[in-house]
Image 1 (cartoon, helix red, strand yellow):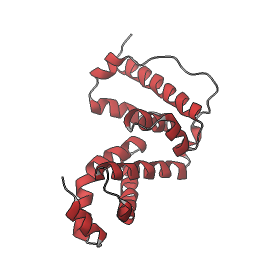
Image 2 (cartoon, helix red, strand yellow):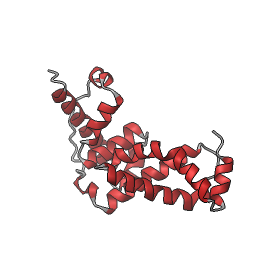
Image 3 (tube, one colour):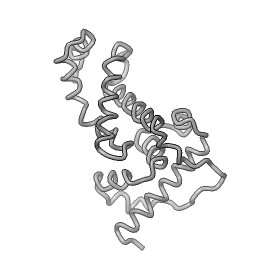
Length: 178
């Protein structure tokens, strides 16, 4: 979709254009926020804060990449900001040189529906969930995650490994798999 006219309107402060842009992306971006939030209300707060940033920073959108990717990045950063502000990530465990070596059973996870998997991920402890989402879903590297969350790269790797083990154990219990 060509967003040129909507963007031009938003840059001029046109409320109708802002509403159109919001309606184009709100559903998907709420899904992004839900992956980081503990509940729907917190996700909605992240979404609204994110759109305020989108509208105030729209003049910095270069247009070289997809608008959706730019909006998504703002939403992820807003969610992380909110988690840091509320000290949600304080339970992130520092890397101690050991990791859980359980490997997630790909067959089990591939049999889950997207909604089932997202529901289980939402139950993860915040530190695990945040690193898991950033690495496995958003595609950030462990180095980028360490910079975003102000943790070591080893801690990011450890949290991801532990998140995968946590996910495997929850799926195993939920579906009574031996």
